[in-house]
Image (cartoon, rainbow, N blue to C red; front, side, top):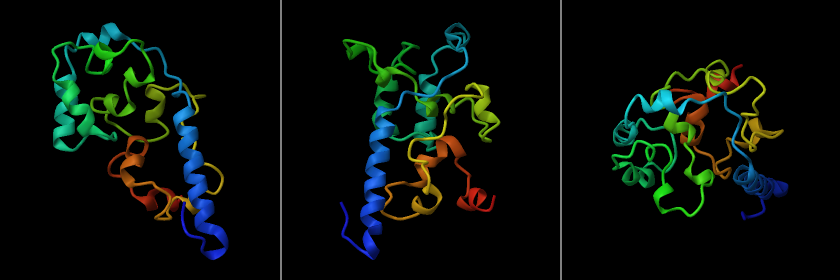
Length: 165
């Protein structure tokens, strides 16, 4: 945890960050509209496209350095369903990440662009966006970084883009 300062504010922020991380790990992914494997497989193997985005630094997800070696496959399924060849059972770990989709579907303008893939009633707000988030997330001890915001808000978002609304 953190040192107690200012009436426990830092302890409270650290607790909230740990609690939100626990919720994020336990949260099921948001609902998607119907997905067509047939349509996507017609594109061929998209692994090189995702790999190129990681190499260029335009991949919006976390852990590109861990994902990159897994994309050296001629199997088109492995591009999005990484780790299947070494898994005993399919899990959420083997499912595509939103950052994978955003390599090609790269127009990010929330909330309008969200509805391209997600139904209007999908719960897309991350669990760490709780009451008081606007006040607490800018604290350097919150554990957030601008990279983690880019998947939903785009790479070129600015903090003031939200805070002036």
